[in-house]
Image 1 (cartoon, each protein chain N blue to C red):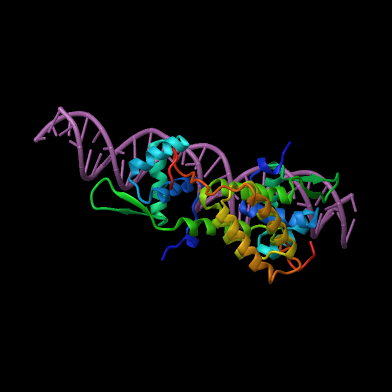
Image 2 (cartoon, chains in turn brown, green, cyan, blue):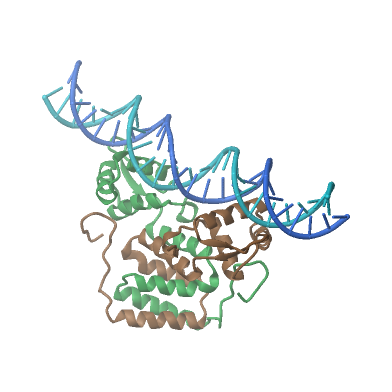
Length: 143
Length: 143
DNA sequence: TTATTTTGACTACAGTTGTAAACTAATAAG
DNA sequence: CTTATTAGTTTACAACTGTAGTCAAAATAA
């Protein structure tokens, strides 16, 4: 069973996934046009990326006659979560908080997003530790 | 002037950077040992990575006689912020909020981190839009 | 039904990344 | 001083990425 956690989507593949996710399903022509407009890519480039995404089972080809329709197999939300987790997994746990702060500051968030984050934080505050340990070196050091 | 925004640090290079950042400065021997223990890497692997980091000016070699000392040139905080921004830049703006929510839920945060995030959110709430537009396709569509 | 266009499959190719061996120049040990 | 050891530099090499050209099969137009 392929899910977002097993699939690594590269930077340029992300662009194609975003288009497919937003369209819900699309023909290669639609994707080629969108990518050409968005990124200036040649038709071949989009085709290659689409192929690679099919191989890694992030996208599936549907229909029995040309032109085929392409649909996402992995979800956008899960893929984004997996990518974000992957990033934070490679960074110092002690500094995750301030990194998240930076992200929040630089992104546009809706009122609902903010309310949601506030609720999550309020809940998390109940059991939050006084400080988070640095996990960058072997053995435990206070950083 | 090299700063975090101009340097792309790869996944394995990150591991070395984390060690250097945490130690403040280190000899290659110290790094080789740390990386061996942490990741099981051979001495060569760490040496190569260290070299590449020097080439891309993320790390500098100090001292006039062997063994040299290696120090970070780019800051940890800035590099983490740059990496996080880079990630979110490639993803749908509309879903940044829920992705951040996922990250917050999966990470350990200190009381101080949480308080800081709450303050930032409270401030941000004052001017937050009702909703954030999807920016995945050319032209504006409601996603 | 032949010619044309489209779509999809296969090939290409340089640059990056992960991983490490080999070689060379210092330095330390005897 | 000679030898052994360590630190640093070069080379290697396959897999993965970004970007795209070529070819063949299918569909559409003439």
